[in-house]
Length: 132
Image (cartoon, rainbow, N blue to C red):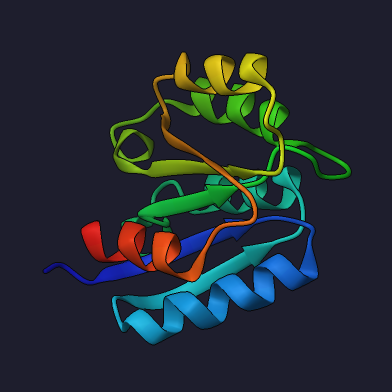
């Protein structure tokens, strides 16, 4: 089973971030977790590190509802970054939205691997990380 070097959590919910970090750490499958409270910070980080493979996350857990730049805006910008390096990044949307429109829209975006409805259970989170 492959170890994930970097996983990015893009979410403004401190409780979700705290719990998710602890669960991921317990799997021992992720070396580093980077946390961004909004899509703009995450996007700027990606842009700043496009030429540094070792700093790019392999997986992003992305919330849709955040201040400054929400998940949809992040995905629009991320898609326009399209490079060989960004195409390898797996994006999981973690949202409290149960809107069929949001789920369908997310699944139509090729960069999105899956749509996970919050609250995410410890087992589901561990299952995702262990399967990567």
